[in-house]
Picture 1 (cartoon, helix red, strand yellow):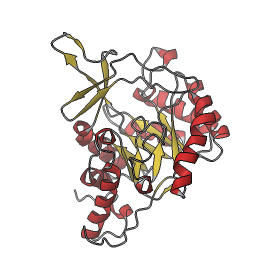
Picture 2 (tube, helix red, strand yellow):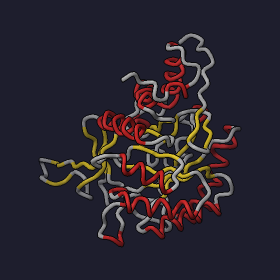
Picture 3 (tube, one colour):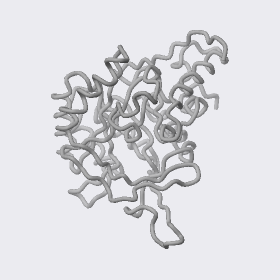
Picture 4 (cartoon, one colour):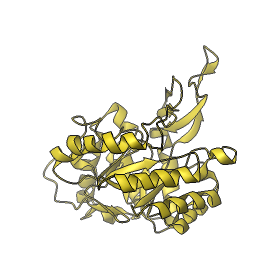
Length: 317
């Protein structure tokens, strides 16, 4: 590649300013420092940590993932260290391993979840009070079972979603992203619920419910029986979800789902996203971050865009 003209690659997710439009997706990047030396952190705008709840959580039994054409089906089950370990061990380690060598702020987005509205609010409060400026925002995973009311996920009913987002909003002043699932009839009422409850941005999409069967053993390939599909296969679904959400809201959107190249990321920007997260692709190629960043800048230069922000919604329908 020749010399690319200087493209302004900064963007914003509500109150959060990002030096790059690329973020790591929760769950695919550990707690932010595991990829050090493999990923070019200078080309990231933010890092999203693996889901945290109040207490440590073992996740599901093994085997927990199965490769399929075009993606991965996983049922890790939100295994995590709990909030105390996150605050006392993970954050100082992130500061030493990532922030110190990088020499610039790299916002850490803490992904949170819980089994009840109260637990979501409590974990949000604990992180807000104890994160000492290292955590820049919270991302709520609402694709978790609401243990108190029959096990339906928080994100499958707009009124339940409104309640849980409102509770977290009251518990924190940190910028708040809500991560939405695509397996709903229309995304609009869920977007509106988040908006009304005071969310600063939306994050989409979460994995798509899926199942893999080992035909030789005539048993599910995953111990949990079902899991969530991510990877290339979900990308067109994610693009449509972002496009539909953009029509329904002015809230910033962090888009994710099958980003393996600059082209995939650019589709998201054109559909209306403000920033893009990379997940599954990093498992097979950690250099995907740098290649995607450079490819977006190159695209902007070729098409006469001075900044990545100009791509947002630049779709001609």
